[in-house]
Image (cartoon, rainbow, N blue to C red):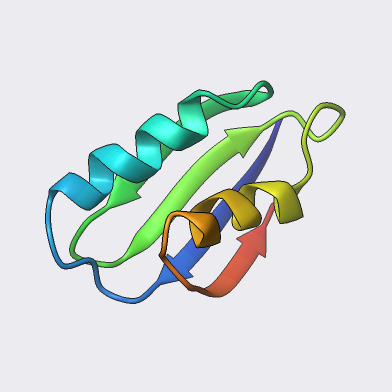
Length: 73
C-alpha cells in the first residue's frame, strides 16, 4: 500500500469530510481515507496496482475541492 496526502483549501463545513471520505471509500483499491477538517488535508492509503494517485485526485476535484498539493510515500 502507498500513502498520499492531498492539501486542499481549508474546508468550510464538517459535511465536507463525509462527502470526500464516502467518495474515496467507494473506490476499489482504497485501504483507508481520512479528511482532516482544520488543516484541509486528505490522507489515503491505496493499492497502486489497482488505482493511481491521479485518479484519486480527480475524484476529489470532481467533488468541488481543488487539490493544491500532493505528497506520495
